[in-house]
Length: 263
Ligand SMILES: [Zn+2]
Ligand SMILES: [Zn+2]
Image (cartoon, rainbow, N blue to C red; front, side, top):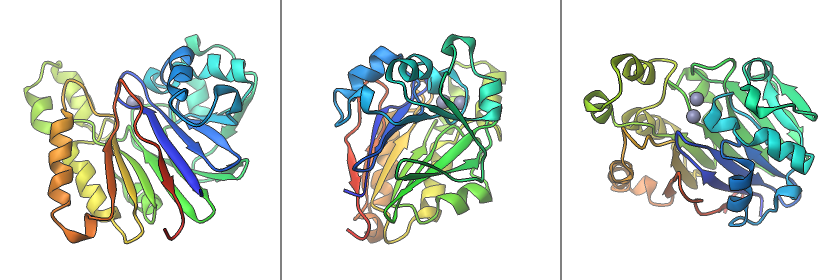
């Protein structure tokens, strides 16, 4: 196994993705309670005390809710940007073991290389990540209003992708949210629509892309059925047939995926 990943939760009520090599285990985001994260890890091949770190994309509650309790309980460091630290909700509590990273500067946790890059979202210093091990690259990028050239460049060549497909634009426009919130979600610092997400996927396709998880679906402004229909639309083309797809879920863990270089 080169690189294993499993989306433990995905959506506006909480996000967390487990990423492992044979000897290093991290969470990217910890947006459920520590208790619920531990319960979800029961469905994964890692126990909470085996975690080597928690990496935060940004400070919104749905990404940080359990990180303080879990890191204190397990003694594992939290890796975050300075801007995320400055805006962290007080409920997270103290982080006795914390490491500050900068977008554009890679760092290692065990034998995983983490490459953070800046994304456009209404947070202090939000980041997407490419996580690399043994020639395998996994891109994790949720909570972005627009796929900038930087995002496209950083996510190119990934073997696995966890990518936001937040809303169907028409459902958002017709939906119950107040006008200001609709504008925020649609804006450059909001969330990626299904159409934007699949347009990005078309750009990111390459022959070694193996697995894609569409993530952070809005429960109000999206429906898994719409995302699945878009996936089926892609799969009409031969070039997508070798790629496994999943839709990340709020209430349950997704299937674990093993990526290996060249397989
Ligand atoms: Zn979020
Ligand atoms: Zn957010």
